[in-house]
Image (cartoon, rainbow, N blue to C red):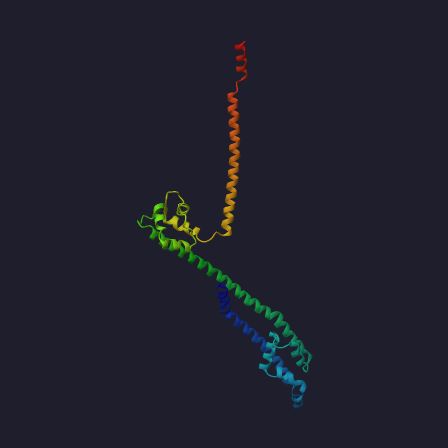
Length: 279
């Protein structure tokens, strides 16, 4: 549910930004709206202009401050085509058309992008806070797992010596509850001797509580890609060491054989003395 949690946190965390954005937009609607409303009121100053059909749409869109603010909001959000609103303002002098175009440029290319960046920044902050929450949850989960392993060791250590021998370990694995717990943490206990040798780091033929807890925690779950690559790298290094050692042994063997042959072969002086004695 992390995605849902981030969405809820982003919505609730953006309320303060939303209030400031509403204040900025309201101020902009008020300034431009009162400009158009004042211009229309000054333009329609005779009974004939009030009854003219040319001014009807202009008055319906910008005749009052609330209508003007609503029309400006709809022009920015896509509720109305801003070209139609610009056409409605044609009875006014040309500078008001320029003011309306300036409003469209500011609202669409400036305000909307700024609002989007504010909400995006808020979402990024929430995401960063969520990472901290995830790290805290992982730490709590690790501590909980270690506490459970400690409780399991205390239950398996019947004599209370703080360590277990192989015989004690095998005896405890005969209990279904112990086997069931190891299965929940994805540890195969079918080979008790192999598991015991993995936990016995110091080769003392006894597993202490620290060895049990740390060893079981490292063996919990499935092997990750990093652990697999580390194992491959260690095997590769071990293979190189074995090949190097094998070459050195072969070279040493050759030297020893040459030395033995040299020792067994008679010298030239011994050969001449032998030939003289035969003569």
